[in-house]
Image (cartoon, rainbow, N blue to C red):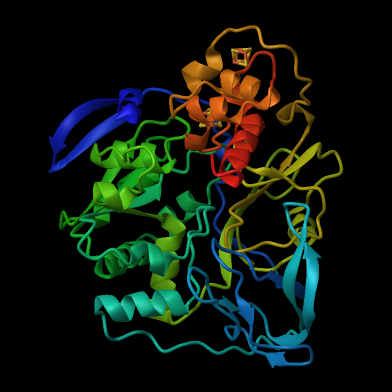
Length: 446
Ligand code: SF4
Ligand code: SF4
């Protein structure tokens, strides 16, 4: 197994589960203190929301409303398409203004449902689910439109539908990206709800054990969760603070000692992974009857007056978040997601979605402008890559249009963690190059 040599096993079979660390990656400044000291706030509901029909991996959802319809908070407005897809619910009460093209973070216009808020806040919700059979729990998760809220957006019901194939549920509370603290805020403020959500996800998946992986830089969260877990069915595993500890393969290895072979899925190693926020959403859907129409997101950076974690309704324009939290004019760069894997925000008309974990307002000291120089062959990108790739050679092959060669250097295994760009003294845009090579290889079916 090629990947295994980039991991190093540390402890074996403590409480039935191996503890292990991976040896590559980087250690960027955490900057968590900017946003993790305040209680979770609430961003006011906007006057209008634009709900993307593609807030998940898979086919876009299909609208079940049209211009002129009145909707209530919690009402289904787009149903999942056949196959992999997810339902979408209205986060506010109001009138549907239309199904319109609206700008997204990718720069392309995509179909959105535009709802104008009537500020009545009239709502509907499902009854709490009494029947706790695997099928009933899975159906409710699917109905509620829950997707991976760590950023991946994979429909959760499809992910958890692995009965008999996975014995361990790994819950991702690593939150290794700098600045982001929304999962930490859930671990501290919704601990009991989170535990219940994990138990429900275990019922759905058939996993007999669960492991919550949390980086050691969150000692209060580790202590609070550990104090409430006495039965041994769910364990907390403190993980080394090292980026990208929260990447799926690194997390699984850190929490269980199991290795997911190259080109395989976690379930092939008997593991299913969900994020902390996803588990909270499972609790809300089943115990409270609330579908997935809002989330907690981190707002941080030195160029925002009121950093913190906030409940934000899906479809809220980023401008509303910026105005409420006090985004400042000296902001040099706005990023959606973390500084390592996130995307630059070019317009505040872009709206939040189920997967928007954070919005960063970075000043000049936090956002160096990069001018790439020639490669000096130092090898740091190779040393840092957690997947054991050679980013500099992949980039060279890409520029020479030698895509087969880029594939041989392992481009398809790239997880877009950004470690290579982070360590490069020549400031080369390696992660973007490897991502492009991966895309071309996939499109050409090489
Ligand atoms: S090549 Fe991909 S996986 Fe490796 S460090 Fe760069 S972005 Fe991360
Ligand atoms: S880190 Fe940058 S300079 Fe060093 S080998 Fe990689 S691409 Fe070249």
